[in-house]
Image (cartoon, rainbow, N blue to C red; front, side, top):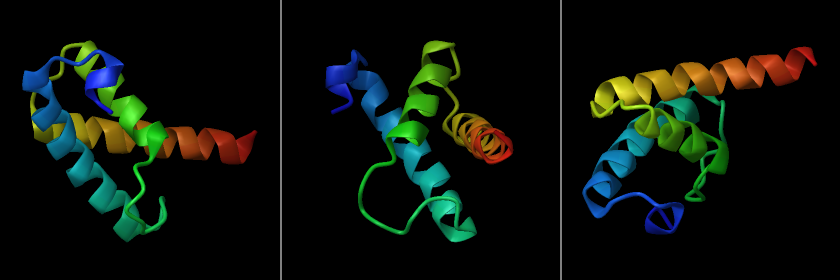
Length: 78
């Protein structure tokens, strides 16, 4: 799935680890359901951040969490 999105093989592990960190936090906070299904919105946020040059998995996960939560809040207001 990640390779189909145009990511180089060396970044698949980084995206996977950052997604795992962010998804775990968001599941525990109740922002996403506790399932094994990949949340495409969260994955999209992580991929965008990676394309913008963020390569530290902890910063990548933290920024993804912040942007994901901001998107949820924006949808709730609209």
